[in-house]
Image (tube, rainbow, N blue to C red; front, side):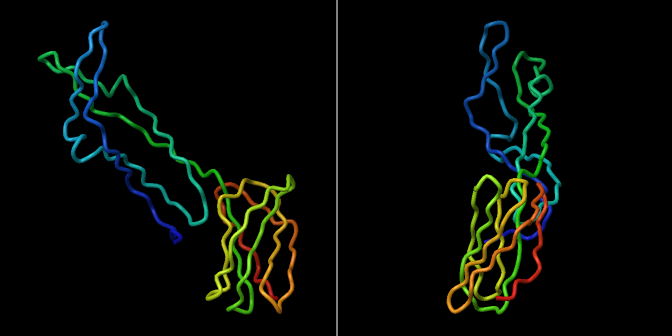
Length: 168
């Protein structure tokens, strides 16, 4: 199941209950106000696109996240910044006529191959998780249709490369 373009607002982390902090060689329990039950919500608010793989870096600021209370106890009030980046691209296309099954394979200059199936209902395909580079795309439809090869398909990180419709 593919994900449509959308905005990811939050990521929720469930924190464990055995948290401690060591100060001057003494270990203290680290209390998490409501974090161990409801989880920690990280604000992301980033648009994502289908067919693109993303990495999310969590930048934990320990200096601001551990707070000493007036009674000598410690609280964990996490200060975490999220940094997201696309790490792949994809190739999207369509074969005509609809109703044809088969496979689509994209091969880069190092002979790394990535493949997917043609959706026989819509004639569409999406090859996800591609590193940046130039690809040769081979459409291998079921008989009686013939294989087709399209060279020079450029893939960029964070982008979906749209191919023109392929008439079989």
